[in-house]
Length: 490
Ligand SMILES: *Cc1c(COP(=O)(O)O)cnc(C)c1O
Image (cartoon, rainbow, N blue to C red; front, side, top):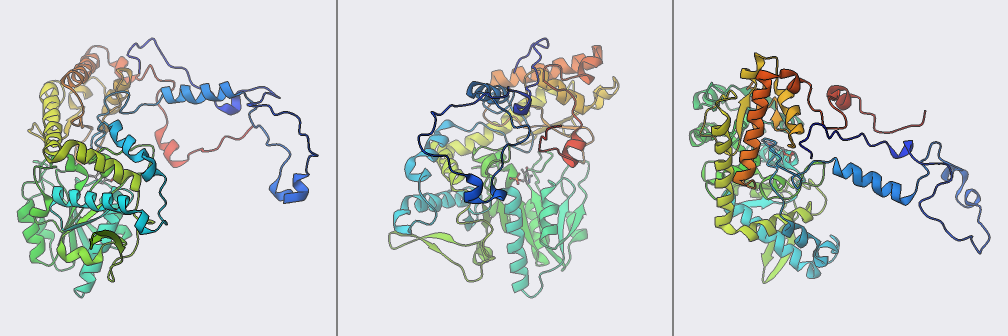
């Protein structure tokens, strides 16, 4: 990314808009056998003479097109990516090396277990690592993402409650929750009851007690919560829920603040999901494969998705569980992500994982301390692994959170998460992660401070941003609601 506002990138045309009739990506010598009639061989419906508007271009045009597009892309390999709640930490290349080892990469899920021992051992050991980090009894690696992990967890909650005689009707969720929490409950046929968090940003035990009854199947809690605060009443809250026969679901997406420091399984948690693509540095973004393992306490082990990997008589085996909720993903889920997460955990070791959490927390507090005089901070800290600022001070100059985020792009950063959590108006949610050095954090803070100064002195510079990107303000609502995914010739 270029920090010079004069260096505006140009919009890359579509391949369809390029080329010249007759231009080819390759040329073949004339055929020395008679041409076959494809339509006669395969039927007219399977063949066509020409595709209308199909681009005719050379190989170098195609290569340049995609290379230019890739240079307009922003990723964690380009710069700091402080997208709160998403933990966009660096993905060490060691993980990629491990996942590409041909013995792993070329194995097939249907090959016999006798020749899959290495992969099964890796999955078994990764499960043990996740159990150790979380304090849960067992973990399924099958779910493809955090949201699918939530669904898997809630299906197990339902199976557990049903076996007790009543699947129950409701799930309690605080108003700070990630949108996937209520969505997962609704998919599981549970009614969502929203609980209010107070001005402290924390869920209070009396709010839980007021909503808890014998029709509540579970409470879902994110800790640290989406305000970046540790829910310090979690043990008391778990006792209230358990006393009426409910279960505690722990959204572990923010485990990057706790790893090796506190274990949810020791705080009354019955079921939780991990986001390997957040905490364990497997790549994410662009909808690429993720992994959302789910850990359970002993009473829920019988309901885990199958197959599960066990170690018996010196060999790794794949086994079914008679009371399992069934499969949530084919085979064992995204095994490539398991390899990357395992490589990450082994490279750091137990103390290293704890250190990465400590540094993630330190970095967030450092940024908060450097910025809270120029931006309003609803929770002045200390915070956990992410901090929240708002646009309250900048509003006086007509500058809003969206403008600040757009202006950051001109400074060469991916913007933070904005307008989330919903309980904080105009939120800018900044999660630096442990990957960033002091110099990078200082440079980011300097940019944020420069934008605050611009907002006061020359607000049009902020409200008009970005100036360096090929396109500036997009109609994001229409793009999401009425996407045009296919280009058709006029
Ligand atoms: C990211 C996130 C999720 C959802 O995880 P995905 O892997 O994106 O499906 C759920 N809860 C919280 C708090 C998150 O940050």
